[in-house]
Length: 124
Picture 1 (tube, rainbow, N blue to C red):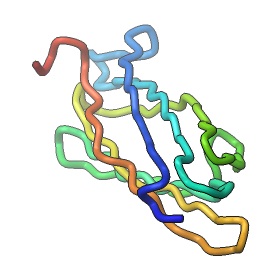
Picture 2: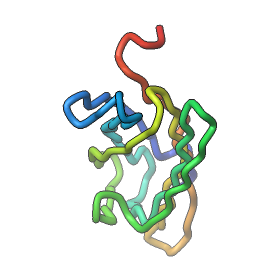
Picture 3: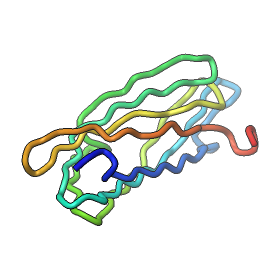
């Protein structure tokens, strides 16, 4: 398998009800779908995120699994989850990678393309 066999889609959402813009507190949720387009099962071992706000502040997040799980994803199947992030600015960017292990023990990283976090209608 290769990283190209893992298809990752992202869908960010601004959570106005959890945010306090007057206190520079902007909360976003993001839903990630990870589809295995390969021929063998893989297990998601860990994640690495780089989160950059509009001030250029970068937060690096690394850890095992996602939302407390290290899911096995069979060929043709997908795993979807939702998580969140808090920023000091109304705009930011997230990107990163997931580390997977194949059934034969080989590990590889699948990149997560940058995606924008922003208040609705702030950026066209």
